[in-house]
Image 1 (cartoon, helix red, strand yellow):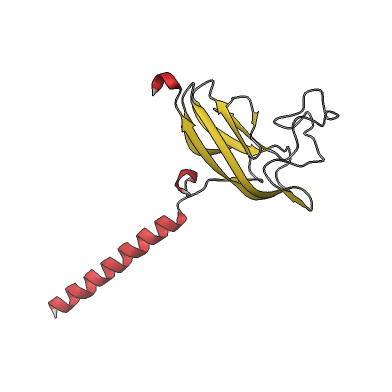
Image 2: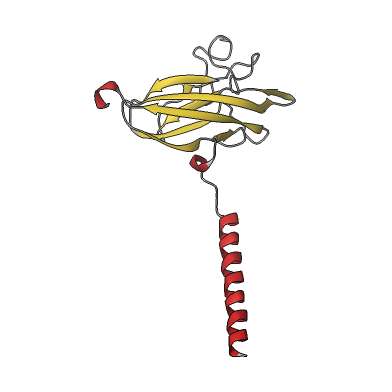
Length: 164
């Protein structure tokens, strides 16, 4: 009888321990760096992808996927071919909205650190980190609530030659 009660008690303990572990795992946020390919969502602002850069590092970013930046028109991380970024976007065209040769609206952009200047990423780029900080990415847009989708990014960091 006592043995049977101990077995039942052990079974309940194992059940509740497993249920607790499963619920904690399911409710905790998934860190971007644990994903096979980090995603940058079109409806979120600056997003850290879990990459820390040191001054002088070279970071290569490649992106693929589609997101909705303009109602009814999906496009890739290269941005919208017809809509240049106006002056109130995080990264805008030098000379204002009329200049169509520089920065498209809806393009993937990046920055290093919380307050670093934005730079153009598009489908891919390589930049040198001018300061230490986390790598942040986002869509080049001012109104994020009407966007959908994401792009997946692949990031490679190389230290400068003198540190190798």
